[in-house]
Amino acid sequence: MGMRGAIAHVDRDEVTTRHKPTTAEMAPERSAPPATPGGLGRTGRKWWKGYFASPVSQAVADIDLEVARRLARTYDALDALDPVEDTNQWAKLDASARSLEISLGVTPGARARLGISLVAAKKATLASVREDLG
Image 1 (tube, rainbow, N blue to C red):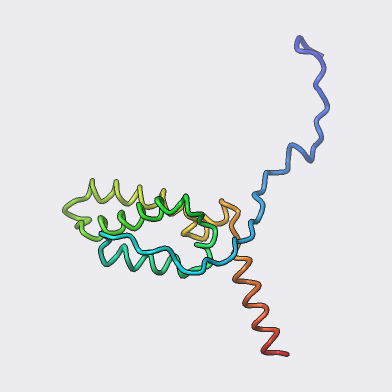
Image 2 (image 1 turned 90 degrees about the vertical axis):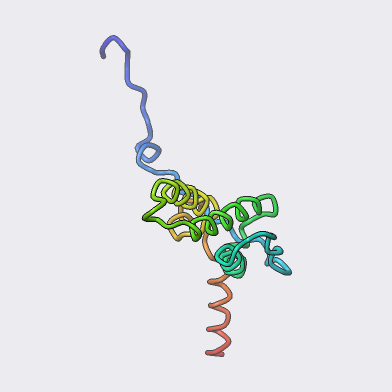
């Protein structure tokens, strides 16, 4: 025992167990994807349609649609720049796009960090396999 006093007992499991995000079930499917925002270029429109056709978009609440709009616009801006001639601007936009991708769970790693699992898609696939075996 030093000047600080006795060391309090700490449960070893509390210290060694990392916090694991919970897996969220996707909300019920939207009846239709959100309307493509006006003013998007070809790249932004293509991303918007593809993203909202994917099961991961079911985790996006209506309040989050502005983030998706911002990402679509960022993809358009990146497409318009030459990464060789506009290196600094392109790098800034690319970093912005990566940050937005993470917040929307666009990449597999981002989905894992957010605790999003494509449970609905997995269940649908399993159901179709069971029907085929039926």
